[in-house]
Image (cartoon, rainbow, N blue to C red; front, side, top):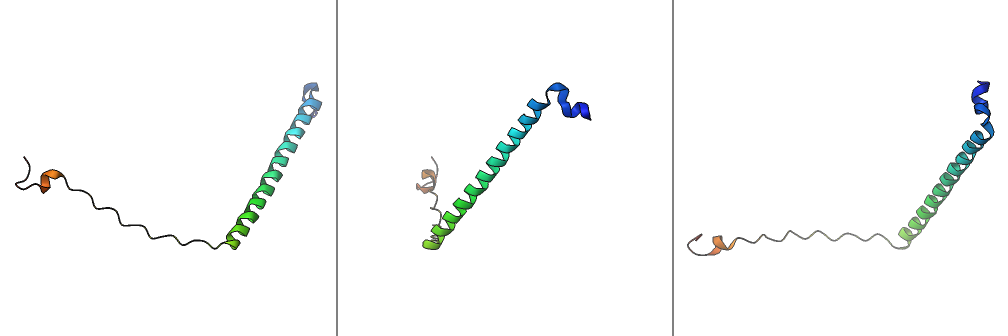
Length: 77
């Protein structure tokens, strides 16, 4: 176990690298969560200031055109 922790003489470099990476990851997590909360507060403020619009009902689909052969007298040529 002692050999693993000493990392073959490179323990200072290896463990400081792990520590730096952990600090960066925790920092990113904190910044992301604080940004999320800030955006959620802004969204809640905007939604409270202006009520949500009701959606307009969807229009009925346009009727499809019939081919010209069906509309000519006598049928297809």
